[in-house]
Image 1 (cartoon, rainbow, N blue to C red):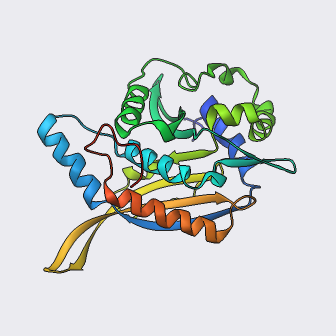
Image 2: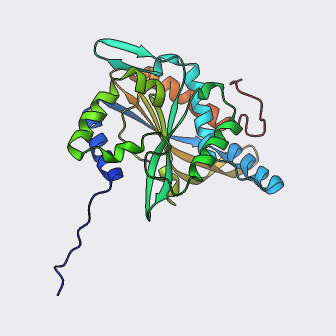
Image 3: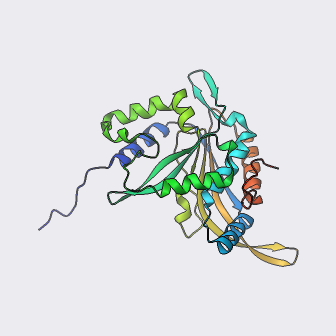
Length: 264
């Protein structure tokens, strides 16, 4: 008879998640749970697919909108280093992309550098290219495949040092998006952990019947969580940021244009 259980070695990805969670659990984070009306952008993406056969990334659209709004709230593109507040000139946004390597599916961060200067289509292409990367080990997208060779007991120290590094902040950013919640079929919000100053977590999509001028209509709402480092961002600025972000997402801006880069 068997022993009634199986045992397997933790992957480097699981060790990295555990190390990051142990460090970020100590952070003072405030969360905003919101519902974004995405009826217009979802319709535009669907129409584009029907006409051209090209499937556009909704995550890329969220990243584009986030970059444009962060550009108008530059104090959010910052982090604490001792008693100093470091504000970055460029907006670099980290995104979790699900990949597969040696039979394991895992989320890996990729970065969109100078996101404030990129079009939606440019961001879309970068994300699609990263997701298509096959056969490469964890860390390949970020240029740090050597991470898997760091002993587990040193990972926490690496994460702790990396949180305060200006060079790493410039390379990987202090703004992030994770969209794993879109795989859920029910209305779901996620409360994440992370080391960024601003973290947008995309949950599931919910269909609602709402009143309109002609009676009622069905609209789609996205469950979104905005998380902010409370050492840097207070509640009122976070609320103003979320209001503008939700309005920008709702607008469908730049989905059908390859040129527009600015919020109107």
